[in-house]
Image (cartoon, rainbow, N blue to C red):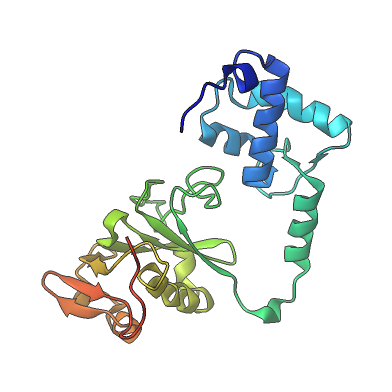
Length: 232
């Protein structure tokens, strides 16, 4: 159903009210709002347009300002609850094992290519073909980008953090989530791994252990036998 909302949220709202609503949305979406995060959103007026609202919210005690994320600008704002969660993550027991997240490349929770720069490969800083596009996925291990699945699942790229065996193993183990029940794909057909055919890749044996099988011009991964298939 459709209805006109101009009287509720349109022309009847002042610029201050609009700015406040936008600031709240950014805080809830990103947890920590930085200049880079705002620029990635493509908001009209950029960071300068929302900074004044965030500063007033800080002065009133509604948000906190600090240097929460290393390597980004000093103008960082967050809700008190988000700061507490960051501290809890920092102080968490490392024996709990690595935290592995499989996220869409364009997901706001996936910071690379927006708030953080994409990792580079090689000593010369060669730029990898990484993009924040729908249909591509990134595996993060303890916050480090380890694997990039190209749009459509045709290619797999290992990122610099993957060189650490303690990151590589859990990162690879996350790939089957793409095709398991509730996952975003029915099957994963890899035509290349680090720009070479899967059979020629150094990961060939490990991919076999995950369930990949040679198919026509690709290596195929499907849900395990007996597992419920993903619905449309």
